[in-house]
Image (cartoon, rainbow, N blue to C red; front, side):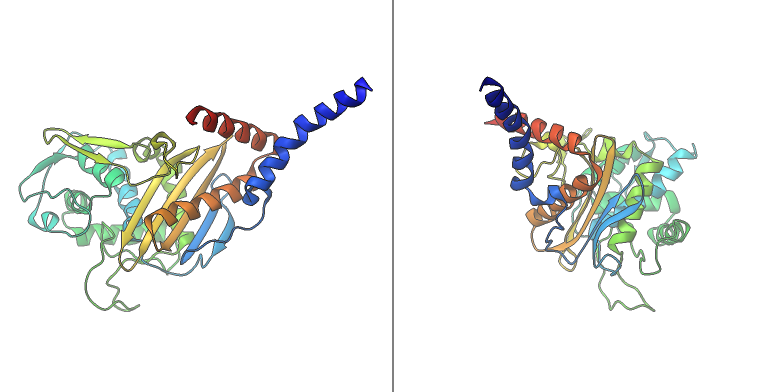
Amino acid sequence: MKKRWLWFVISAVIVIPVVLIFTTNTERIGIRPEVEAKAVVLMDMNTGQILFSENGDEPLPPASMSKMMTELIILDEMKSGHHDWDEVVTISENASTVGGVRLSLNTGDQLTLGELFQSMAVYSANDAAVALAEHFAGSESEFVKRMNLKAKELQLSSKTYFFSASGFEHSGKNSADNPRETRMTAIDTAKLASHLIKSYPEILNTSSKTQMKLSGRDLYLSTTNWMLPSLGGPYSYEGTDGLKTGYTEKAGYCFTGTAEKAGSRLIAVVLGTESKEAQFEEARKLFDYGFSKTLTLKERLNDWFHIGKSSAALS
């Protein structure tokens, strides 16, 4: 009789957590998630495999997610050794008048390369992106040429085209012969993010910052990525450490996120949700689905227990 009770207890200890994992989040058992966005893609960065795609090859405005290409080109330049992060940049009139999210920089203001780069990566400042483009290429238009050449070098599809260093939308009719706005496919966006992380893994140190300070200005800039676990909010997701959000009226809310668990790194791209919250909710669905594919049962159990302990500590 005692053996039967012992066997019952052991079985309960093993089975109940597994059942809870599978019933509390269906994405964890490999059921394809229902997503609400114009386009989504989930990539296993370790293998390059696309695990999930809806409208993944449709060209759409990516808003500030195009800044990942700006970051890549600047990091290439820094790698050459011809520049230093303490190098001073003088803000031009063109950079000071760009629209959208900005630092409200004035013509003649001076900031370091490092300050401008972090302002662009963490806070998504458009004037910082334009100032950097002008500093490295002489003009934003010349920098954009380099962005499109880099896209070809990375073998991104012909559907992806860069029009600005910031992703800010310009007025004018957009067409295949006369593009006036940046367009990216979700698949190309995931490929760009993967190349950026693999080439410069230190970008995750920047994109995982929750806040930065501009020296001499007494100005603190907060991250736009609500999935960072250090924020501790309702959208935080364990293992997330990047990468880029974006929003314009035409693009909607967009997000390229990356998360790592047990050595498995995923990239989730969400284009065109209707609210700021939704971009992170859809990314969560993709991450849950992806880790159900890439993690072993043992690793998922460990992840579940870790989440359970964290939740208990917060309650």
